[in-house]
Length: 297
Ligand code: NAD
Image 1 (cartoon, rainbow, N blue to C red):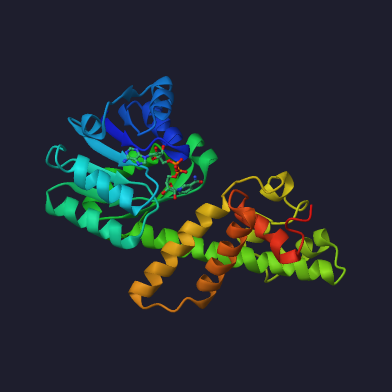
Image 2 (cartoon, rainbow, N blue to C red):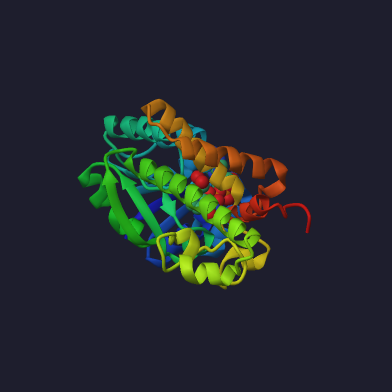
């Protein structure tokens, strides 16, 4: 069993660190929030007083931080200077591809192992150990990281070289946003045309309009009982988080010279929903904006 430094014990990191403890690892936990560290200790981790304390003597370092600037600062300022040669780094945060390549490239140049391993699945999947990991890095580094990721997830997929995990994540979420908005528009039009929404679901979920946004995450109340639509659009996956991923996708598209007009439109619509107060609502709540009921209930 390994000694693992876990940095970033927020909504996601807390459950992930607990699953590494359950798998028998010695987890040294650090977060800027003392309360987050205290919770990790309750779950069987040991408290580290700083990121450098956590990293010193660790076989592996897992980071689950908000954005690229935090990942760059933590690795460059606190992880690289104290980690032993050959230490494995797993950055599970969702960040921009450029930062992942920058940090990962620097880590490998310094003789460390590095994978970018962003996740699909929310807090429940982090707690339940059922995340999907999309992993970028060399074949050797992927092989070293896989057992740790398996302890926190149900699927671990090698996407390609460093940065490929982040690339897969933002492409997937851009597609998710587009299909969600399209599904919401179709339900809104069906309603205006006097079509019963359950009937439209019964038909479209078995016809060519079918998608995950329709059948697993239906944005109108009723057809799929477990979705946020049945719970006043409590997240789930918050609009603010989707907007963050769409901005990353647009930044990446611009730097790669890719044409993503629907991704740009999705970002604009989610920015509008965010501004109108939908920030903390589930991203499927954009249905209320598109049907014209947002703010009226
Ligand atoms: P969060 O804000 O709850 O947690 C981030 C934690 O990092 C906080 O506890 C914060 O105190 C800590 N932190 C920030 N800077 C730090 C530093 N320098 N040193 C130590 N700790 C530091 O965020 P989250 O919801 O857990 O998300 C984490 C990452 O996972 C994000 O990149 C997010 O996009 C991604 N993600 C989240 C979800 C979700 O549903 N919440 C789903 C998939 C991916």
